[in-house]
Length: 117
Length: 107
Image 1 (cartoon, helix red, strand yellow):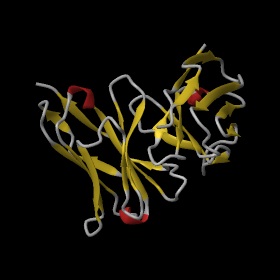
Image 2 (cartoon, rainbow over the protein chains, first blue to last red):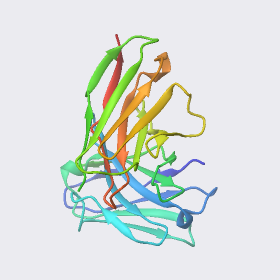
Image 3 (tube, helix red, strand yellow):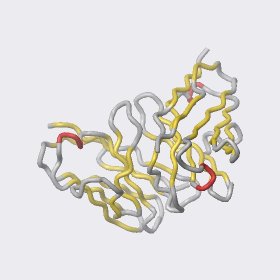
Image 4 (cartoon, helix red, strand yellow):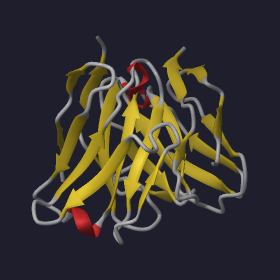
């Protein structure tokens, strides 16, 4: 399994960006899928998760600005990021957990989001 | 939200040393605790899940223990490929969280 994230890039403060994550070898909707980010030189920060049942949860730092979703037909996970701030600059990873213990066993390579004017 | 505190933030050790990293939760999380290893420029890799279960393919020199609020990750005999940063992660709450990380460096 090799998750692939796309959609990162340079964006101005206040702008929007949508990240995508997919792997043809497994079904996104059958797993718990998460986004985790890492600012340059910093540790891991959990961003959001979507459960198998479709319930979604967010870190306080992104609540109201970011939306996690999935397209079951396209077998793709998304992270819609609005009202971006400089402090959102980070490498964004998607990862999957096969069960309710939310131990993330497969990760993407990461996509860099840079928020700067 | 549940805060995860790791200690120490960094440590220096030699090949063959026994290394212990601690992770403390701000409230009880039963055994909903996972450990990851991350090397520079790479995605994290799962080492331990459910506090003490070794993920498939992970060497047996890695072990985890603990329940409630206090957890440890132990490397019984440090190998050159183990120099990396280690993170704990709780999955007890719907709002997940990671510890701040422990960087293991070569002495």
